[in-house]
Length: 77
Image 1 (cartoon, helix red, strand yellow):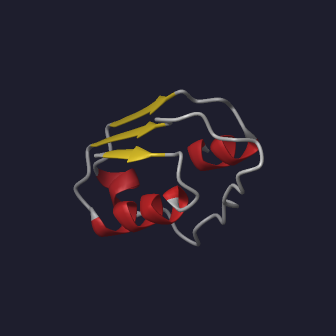
Image 2: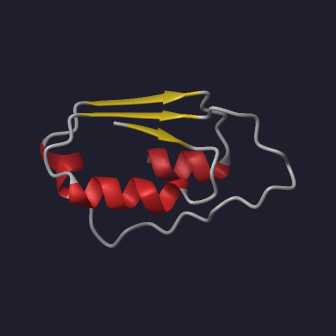
């Protein structure tokens, strides 16, 4: 599964995907376009529990154009 991190709703999509895909083995996050500094970015709200697929089946997380922003660091952790 590939999710683009350019849209402001990407975190919501990511959480829905993780919760709804208990057998997810591969996840790729990619920034397809340059994000303007003025574009609002979502705030990470840590889920109350770790999605099942992260614990039981996710083998690979590939993050393309990881910039190390605070938001990205929180999601990766």
